[in-house]
Amino acid sequence: MTILTRVQLKAPYLLLIGAETDATYAKTALGLVQWCPEKVVGQLRFEGATVDLGVPDLSVAEAAERGCGSLVIGVAPVGGVVPDSWWSVINEAARAGLDIVSGLHLRLADREDLAEAAKHSHARLVDVRVPPAGLPVGTGKKRSGRRILTVAADCAIGKKYAALALHRALLDLDVDATYRATGQTGIMIAGEGLPIDAVVADFISGAAETLSPPNDPDHFDVVEGQGSIFHPGYSGVALGLMHGSQPDGFVVCHDPRRKVVSGWPHYDIPPLAEVIETHMMMGRRTNPDIRCVGVSVNTKGMPETERSDLLQALAEETGLPCIDPLVDGAGAIARYAVKHLSS
Image 1 (spheres, rainbow, N blue to C red):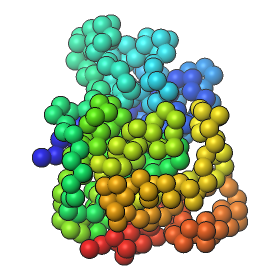
Image 2: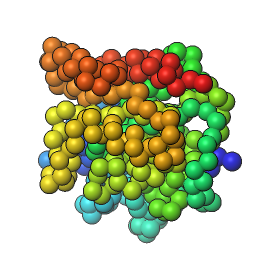
Image 3: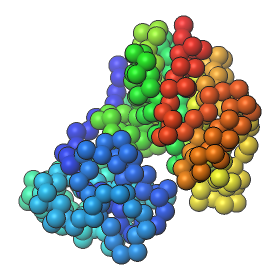
């Protein structure tokens, strides 16, 4: 039985990013703009914000006049804490009848003032990062079907984008494939999934097994990665997800300009070869046949010549398709995966 968190959000969305100055922590808002722009009416920013989603700046009142359905908290800061100064605006949105959507490690209804405002306006308080009850402990038993997991040496480096692009590319090849969301933004985009980093540690691998159940032999599940086995703070969730997913293939998400772990500058990013080798070693615990099927590279802002030279050099170094999914699409990795992973 598949146990998933399912959400149905009321569109269009006003994306709250407050005074955020680091795009790394605005990944929820950026992901929604990238993958479902038709559902976004605007952004709500405070003085001092430098992150710009490229959509209209709107107040709560202006968004409500445009038929906005939900205020989505569009940031994911370390620790998942909403600044105290934000709650007056969030309460204003609830009083205006907008649903309030959060993917953070908090419960909206725990705010009595917000719960009261929502009650009077009949707005919903939607907590996306709530795992379902009844998740099992992982068994490690082999399951039918094919699975690809996106991994990386750091967080917020493109695992969700790579998984979504790969899923789209597989569908373009007429391959039966499902995107399996494991984070709040992915769940908002797909409408279902499992917030894997909110699962009690003992059940992470079991949750991953539940998320990607047995399937037809030629069906591909594309599992969105979380954290990193190299991360000093979030390695546990990444390893549990890998062991439970039992991926036949994995895609490494890579940013050659990132030299240290984001937010942990005292930890260096390991070389790409080490990232691939370590994932192979750890992944063999539950799937002895695991292999790397490609590298997803963030080349944003690079001149075309530099970008092309980098991708070619990485392809020669790894012997794998190396692409930027937002520029090139993920077709090359999809074709490689189908060829090398199909039964």
